[in-house]
Amino acid sequence: MKPIRSFLFVPGNKPSWMEKVVAAKADALILDLEDSVPAELKVEARGIVQSKLAWLAEQKQRVFVRINRSPHLYDFEDMLAVVGPHVEGIVISKPCGPEDVDCASMMLAEAEYRNGLPVGTTRVIPLLETARALEFAYEIAQRDRVAALCGATAKNADVARALGYVWSPDGRESLYFKSRAVMAARAAGKLPIGGVWQQVHDVEGLKKSAQLDRALGMTGELVLHPSNVAAVNEVYSPSTEQVAYYEGMIAALEKAEAEGRASTIYDGEHIDIAHVKTAREIIALAQTFNG
Image (cartoon, rainbow, N blue to C red; front, side, top):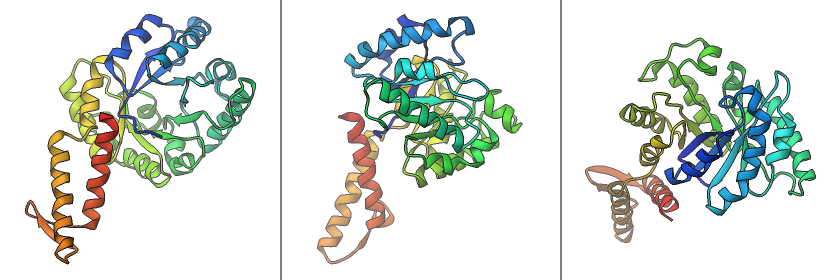
């Protein structure tokens, strides 16, 4: 799946918001039918989301939908309403383990069949919000439909309640299980996604939090407000200076190789082919976001 720096949540019962947030330039939207929608408006929200999908596709906006779940099952009516060519995937909350992902996948297969979509097209992004899901992160990441794992640690939210941790701005209490999510996702070839920064008006705090996630190996963040998208995109995009640095690294090694050496000193550091492989990946990532 093409990298995603910013996943912006939009309540499914707010059609005008869906139109406005396109300007924020989030890499992907998550149209939310779950926690951000009051219970009495969920059916209405489902119809609103369904009605906006084609328009969002015309805007070249990547879209995922977070569906509802009961204590035992994900909402098939939500799936049936949104599965189609304009939805890249669904987001599922609080899976207890890989079995829940398997269940959602089978339901998706039926929805795809009924809606005339090739079976297996729709991706799944699980939010690791239970202790058991975090324990079985790799098994979840291995599922074919899973495109990314969300190892998010919002203050006072589901993960905090499940694990009993006390949130802090520096995130020390969540380093272990965020790293579990990163390692599981990377081992399975999927995207590790972090977040969520709830103090949406504290953009500097958001940047620091995103930088910590990025340092752990996350590739993007869940975002709650359009004003936060630019900061997150910046953190997860190689800067012009970084691109120039890595281009110089590649040129330095190529020069060394032309002279019969497999390593050299670049900007005061020893480099070899392993470092240049990293450099090429970072330059390719920059080109992805600038293309």
